[in-house]
Each structure stands twice: as structure tokens, then as C-alpha cells.
Length: 222
Length: 304
Image (cartoon, rainbow over all chains, first blue to last red; front, side, top):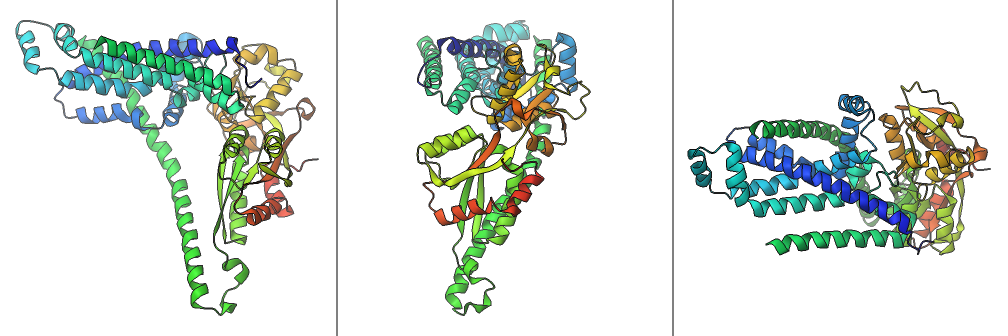
């Protein structure tokens, strides 16, 4: 038994991981870019504090992030109650919780990459666009983003990769419900723990294949 | 876009701020523990040094109250123990180290399945306290645990816990069905013995089939308890000992012992130990009345 692969059990975690990572990567690239754009143009004093706060999920252990999220979004908290009232069900132990955990841990990477990208854009080009009557949105859409497109790809891949590998925070707030909230990293953890080595290997290989393909696509573009 | 990005920043900021606040809390929770740990280690090292000096400088041993104990070099014993033994072992550690100043106990707490794996991979453990005979037997079969130095040490009971402020009418197994009534948390049955017992009991009550797909599986008993304490699970299956240690949850009912296999905690000396004599002494101590009394204080019982 430990040396056989259960093909029906193999697929759900992979599908869930891709679904969670894909959705959260879209959210994180949008919000991360927006935050980086806004702060790279800001001269305010509090900027450095905000940026430091943004970086926190990167240095905190994922289980700490997960525990904080569990308390923040749990059924006892105001936020948790609001979500339960809004959707009629708590967010904890659903795949949406995994999306949130993944978003939080991937955000610093995306933010940092986009920040560097926007900083590398010559401010005079943006000033020229503004002088020609472009709105802030047009400056971002037609000047800054195209010039920072290399960073955009890097940021997206970093965010996606971090999300795909997310384990600690996800396990904490999405729990481990096989077939529902069990992502590939959680499935690997459980399989190793239970001695199902061939299953653990099968999932590990699937992770390597996806990561490899993604890096390959990214490199092919540039 | 301006409005949008503004909102995004405010939202992210709020989240991060809350993260920071909570992070401070958890940090201050942790630090005293680590500090006391490191200081006890350095203290122990100091005593070891000074004993050495004493021995070489003053051959007249009558100054020492108990030369047999004092002159021995410091031995660090690593005990791989099931997570549910944490509190009881912490108290035993103080007693034992007081009686045996040359012994420094280090604990490696985890799920029994993980601990078994670590020992199979050659982790430097001296004593193994498992929450399940299955893990112990697997190691004995591989001759990784000394065949004549392992025994059933303790027994435990399975209980259902609910949040301390819960008003849910949960008094017996039958109250848990039908589906979607309560969010139930158990340990991962494949690797957490408490989860395996819970699965057995739920199966016996004809509930496993219907509830299975909704059950959250925690990576160890503590996580199950955490889910219940934070109100995110309505009911969780943990050991009686874990339920007693928690103030934010309460026992809803004791699961009928006939509905699951006996919960036995075996102890065994790891065959590859470099301190066989000391490990065996500790193994013997754990079976004394004094040690058992401490275990009983935390809710354990003696196996039949």
C-alpha cells in the first residue's frame, strides 16, 4: 500500500493548489502593483513605515502569519463575523482562506519587485506625459507599466511561486480537509507523515514540473 | 485608479497593522520561554565546569555532599515525546533534574508518526515516548528500540471538547450528526493517533461516512484544540489530558472507551543512544510511583 499511487487522490490537491495560486496571484499582482505605484510616487514621511509593515509577512514565520489570520478572520472576530454574515458561512476552513493566506505571504515579494520596477522608470518621461495632459491612470497604463513590464513578469512569477509553495499559514486557516482545502504542500506533509512516500513523491514531482514550466515560460519571453 | 489604489493601500495597511500588533503579542509570549531555556543550559554548563574544577583542585571529596552524583560529567538526554505529554513532562523534568544534577533533559515534542520517522532517519534521541503502540512497535521491529527496554507506560482517554463559552447541545456522539450541523476537528487519522481513535469512534457511531468530507484534520492534537479554542471548530476530539490543560475549551463528553482501541503510551529506550545507562535510568524513573503521580495529575492513567 505505501508504494502504490492512488490516482484519484492525486489530482484534487493539484487542482486546488492551481486554483488557489492562480486566483491569489491575480489579486496580489493587482494590489501589489497599485501599492507600489502609489508609494513610489509618494514623498510622505510615513512611507518608510508603511513599506516596512508591507515587508513583515516575509520575515514572520508563516505559522505566525497563519495564527494571526486565524484569530483575525476566525468566527470570534468582528471581521470573521462580518464575513459569516455576508456570505452565510465562515471563511476559515474554506479554499478562500487559502487564497487569503497565499495573498498575504506573497504580497511583500510582489510589492518589492514592482517597487524596484517603478523606481527604474525615468521620472522625466512620466513628467512629460503629465505635461501633455495625461491622467495618472494614463501615465501608469502607457508609460510606467510598459517600461516596468520586466518587473511585472518577475513580480507575477515570484508571487505565483511563493503562493504555490505556501504551507504554514494555509494549513492554519484553511485547515486540512482532503478534497476541499488540502493543497499540494499540505498533502505532501500529510503523506510524508503517514509514510505514503510514493504519493509524496508524485506530488513533489508535480510541483517541480509546474515550477519548471513557469520559469521556462518567463525566460522565453525575455 | 487614484481612488482604487488609495483603497488598496488603506486595506493592505490595515491588514499589516493588525499583523504587527498580533506579532508583538506572540513574540512576548515566546521570549520568556526561550530565555529561560538558554539560561538553564548555560547554568548547567557552568555547574559542569565548576564540578570539574572542584574535582581536580580538591581531591578531598568529603566537601561534596553526594560525590557520586556531583563528579559525573553532564549528560544531555534527548526525549522524543508525543505532543500530548508536553505539560506533564515539563514538570517531571524539573523533578528529575533536581534529583540528578548531572542530567540535562531536552525534549523533542511532535506527532508520534513524525517522531518515529525522525528516529528511523537516525535522529539523536535517547528515549521515545509514543502516543501509540503502532509507532513503538514499528521501531522495535526494526531493532531501533531496545527490545527489553520498552513498556506500556500510560493510558489516556478520548473526549470531545467544545469552546468554553459554547452553548451547543453536544452531550453524546449522536448529537454530532447530521451533516453540516457542526464543524468537527480531529487529528489526521493516518499520522495522529488521537485522530485515528476519533475516526474509530465516529465509525462505530455510524457517523464517519456522512461527516468525513467536512472534518478538518489538524496536524496534531494541539492544532485541533486551537481550532476549538478560537471557536473556528464547534467540536474537536482530543485526549482528556489536552482538554484538562485548556482553559478556553471544555469537555462536552467522554467518548465511550469501548468504541475505540485502548489509548496506550509506550516508552522505550532508543537502541542507538550514546548514554544507555542514563537513558535506562530515566526509563525506570518514569515508571516509579512518583512519576506516575505527576502523570495522573495531568489526566493520564495507568494502563490495565
